[in-house]
Image (tube, rainbow, N blue to C red; front, side, top):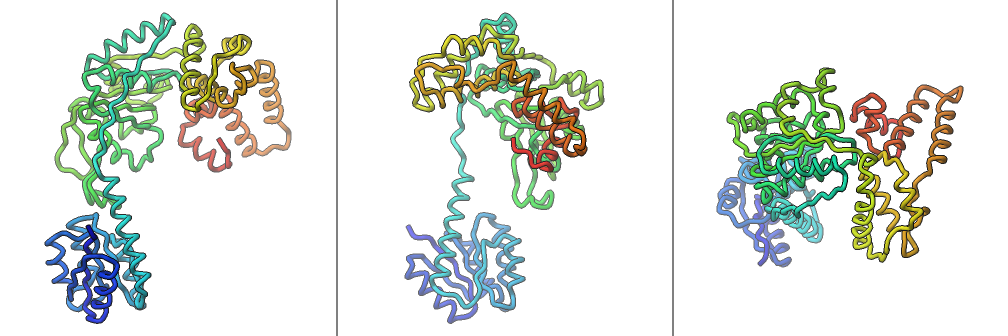
Amino acid sequence: MSDNILVVEDDINMQKALLTTLKRAGYGVTTCSDAFQGSAEFRRGGYQLVITDMKMPDRSGIDLLTEIKELTQNMPVIMITGAGTIDTAVDAMKKGAFDYILKPFSPEKIEALILKALESARQAVRRRAPKKRKVLENIEIVSKNPKMQQIIKLIESAAKSKSTVLIQGESGTGKERVARMIHCSSPRCKGPFVAVNCAALPEGLMESEFFGHEKGSFTGAIVKKDGKFKLADGGTILLDEVSEMPMFLQAKLLRVIQEREIDPVGSLLPVEVDVRIIATTNKDLKKAVKNGKFREDLFYRLDVIPISLPKMIERKEDLRYLIDLFVKKYCKENKKDILGIQDDAMDFLRSYHWPGNIRELENTIERAVVIATEKQIQIKDLMLPSAESMSALQMSAFDEFLKVGSTISQMERKLIIISLEKTAGNKTKAAEMLGINVKTLRNKIREYNIIC
């Protein structure tokens, strides 16, 4: 089925030329001689593209464009303009026109622009099409560690309730995995699971991202948008790194928990939501409350069911099980046939301190599986520093850090690099070590052009 194009052009010769060109290219074409006729014809529907002259008597192409965009944001509109109205054409693109074409133009040029506009519209439709909701596979956590066994029992009990859960633990201890296990084991398992990193969202857009906004509520809000809470309706929302949420948003989150409703930006009426909230943090929230960086009332609303995850070094009983699990996983992904791990390599992994916790262990095994050339993983495949080499590396870095003649900026840059190395590249943990927030650290990384 061919695409239908509406052409609005008062110049009869240009109208005939476009009609001939587009019909020859296989399109269905309807022509109108002014914007009033064009508006009436467009409202009848059935068009995939509009081409309109910019300058017409009584009513301009800009007026027609504005009306079309009020009816639907999704219709691509190409503006035809003369040399004297290029500035106006650029303004039209700011108002939603797909592109403009300058008179005179060849048939090949207009055909290429039409193809581009129609393909862009089709891609937009595919992006807007409702996606089949992905149901998370059931997640199981197995552990021989007594503390983790108690946590697993707590997770199973928490999953049956609607209560808010606060998961605390160092970066890489598996906080999101626990959150997903709670969701998958709950009556909401067939509902959405929406994870939001509170530290990664720009502060100016946070309220809109969380609660949505109405069309025209602020500059750039050209369409209505649902926020993360609305997207999680009927399911679970994970507020990752909740300690990084600014104070103004903490107050709004408190109201959402209390009232079970959200206030989209620009909306006059609240919207009810049925959402289970799980929050995670690698910081001590009680300490943050004491320091005035986190609301005490919000803390107690989140801390209904507290779960504190142990470090990897505190659950060495699980090391062998986790290694076997990761070897199997990455052998399958990389089509490798690794039978296991050599005894000396296993002993080394048991003696390692794992500053990056389970995440570092998984990354280490993935790397070892990829580069291993033998049937068993060897020490050299792990690419982890020994205790002696790490100590020497730290002393060398310390000596270099205190080198006479270094500027404050150079010392700051080196300190950031050392901190990132110490935390296996984890920016949140490195920022905590440095006594700054994550956003400041990211700005410093860009300023000093640090690759991490």
